[in-house]
Length: 249
Length: 268
Image 1 (cartoon, chains in turn purple, blue):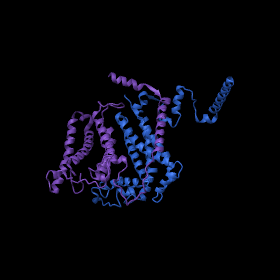
Image 2 (cartoon, helix red, strand yellow):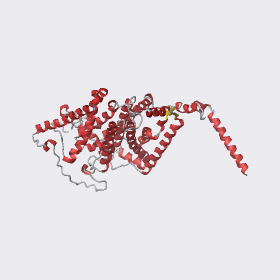
Image 3 (cartoon, chains in turn red, brown):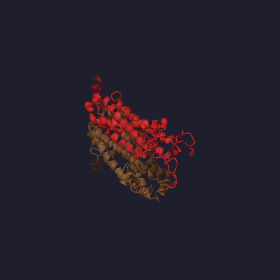
Image 4 (cartoon, helix red, strand yellow):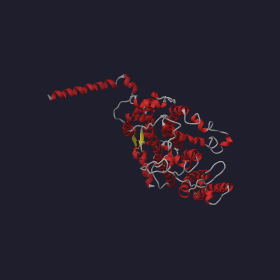
């Protein structure tokens, strides 16, 4: 209560924008322009040889800000990594204000009052976006193989492809059975995960409602599915979890 | 000797003051600026309210809103970087032709022959990269302060669209140098469109829709089945006209809604 009053007192304390804010903005703008100008004088924008459709560079990298998504191409087919994931990221970001109805932490820094929201966002932003971009820029070389930044980029480096589908690990040889098995695993993951969310948040069901918990759990489980697939690939060489005649996951 | 210098100094000062008075009291000056510069509360408010560029701000703000620690200045820096790319981009447009035969030669022309051509191109590119980073940091700051919470939910949605447009602006500009880096980065990026479910020829369920490599989501983007001159022209038009106009309109909405939604967020 005392804390709230203190905060209230602080926000009522108003100060003239001219000169106090304009001064900060002007200094900030001058510093940015100085840095940008010096940077642009000293470091030239890259310009390679003329575009040549018959000469594919190895590796071909997307612009650096998309390298997190390109990294996902290792673990998922293009329709997931290149289309579904970006759409989910954009929609997922947009729905944040509508699924996070925790009234606390509005307008000030706090972790303790909203631990789930902040840890989920920071995990997605720092690990799944920023760290994967750093990995893509500095650690991926020819053939999209992993190299240390100081290592020679050997274009003939051979990495054995020993990936198998999850169903084969369980000894399922028939394609039909493998499809059914994979479907059960993927659908089961979402069903069990969603049920767990509803169980854990059963006390706030009244305020949040079915839709909010449903959307939150779906987005959270999808984000975690990326991590699970990465670990399945790196530790157990799993190629696909679910194979069907139309798509593979 | 000293006295003479002192006198000269005073004469110069009184002359300059006279010039200042002449200017400040002229009809031309008064028609542009309706308040004096004297440091009074009224003038402090008029400096903001009477200036089209500054009236985006309120006349007074809560003290916490000034703290660099609170805002990181990132939204403002993003806007500044956008303005830099607009100004340098217009200069580059004087010299650059988005045609397969000319584009790369025009880049070389800009680099070696055009006065200040290289620094214009450098500033355009680095400001664009900086804008991508600052817009991410702006989003991080807005999230960490919970500023998307009511009543600012919709402005966060507008912000997410602006973030997407920033990436698209940068991506469409990436092709324009028409060098190997540009062509293959955009090839990698746009290949994803061919994997769109239903609409891309390599995507799931494409066989039920009947799209092919010359008629699907990617070919609509590229104007062909590979990154060629039609793609260059399309990306140029998107980069210089369509996306900047869309982003500009949304920026107006974004800035306006900050004020409409109660100004910058703060502890209630």
